[in-house]
Image 1 (cartoon, rainbow, N blue to C red):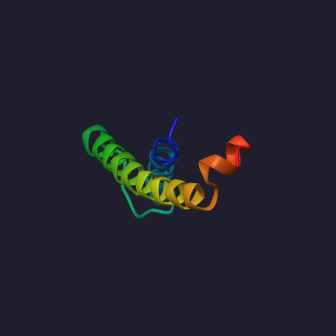
Image 2: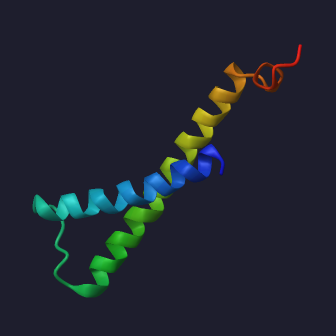
Length: 75
């Protein structure tokens, strides 16, 4: 799995958790079913996009610092 997919998975979870946290502090009203599902889906999608972008950037940074030749042990 790539760094972007790991980041996207984590971002989806964090996006849903943020929506639930906002509901707990009283910023969102999740008492109706359809708007609650919409908020959770939107939070998951936005979190997934941001997580994928962060994971992609961190993956590129890691690959730039660790070359393939150094990882395989060849000179």
